[in-house]
Amino acid sequence: MKAGDLELKEKVVAINRVVKTTKGGRAFSFSALVVVGNEAGVVGHGLGKAKEVQEAITKGIEDAKKNLIKVPVMHGTIPHEQLSKEGAAKVLIKPAAHGTGVIAGGSMRAVLEFAGITDVLAKNLGSANPHNVVKATFKALASLREPITVAKSRTISLKKVFNG
Image 1 (tube, rainbow, N blue to C red):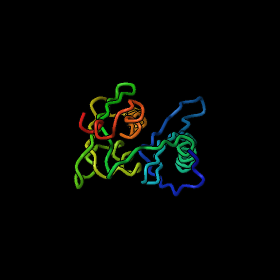
Image 2 (cartoon, rainbow, N blue to C red):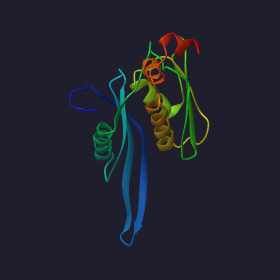
Image 3 (cartoon, one colour):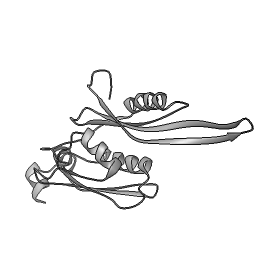
Image 4 (tube, rainbow, N blue to C red):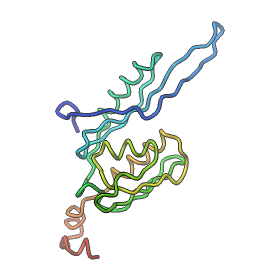
C-alpha cells in the first residue's frame, strides 16, 4: 500500500521519555508511537525515536506510512469477531450494530477510528502497554476476511457464509 496518493491523518498514541545516565549527566531522548489512517479502510502505525519530541513524532509518521494495511469495513463495522495477541496484550474486536459507535479503550480507539470503523465493540483483555495493544489491534485487523473472499475460498455461496 502506497502512502503518496492517500489523504492520511495522524494521531500520537504515546510519547515515552527515555533517560540515559552518562558521566556528563543525563541524556534525554523520546519515542513516539503514531497511528495514521485515511478513515476509509487504510491504517498504519509507526515508532519514531529522537532527541526532540517533534522530531520523534515526524519519524513515527514516516514509519507509519511504510506500514499501511487495508482493513475490510462493511457498513461501518468489521465483518466478524477477532481475537489477537501481541506480547501480554490480548485484544478482542466484535462487529456492532449501526449507531453503536467505537466502544474501545485508549490506544485501540485511535487505530479503529483511523481505519474508518464507526461501529465496533472492542476489549483489551491483557496488558495495557500501548505498543503491544496497537500491534495486537493491527494483527486482528489484518487477519479480518471479507465474506466474498471466504465464499470464494470455500467455493460456497455468499448466502451460506452468512447463514452458516
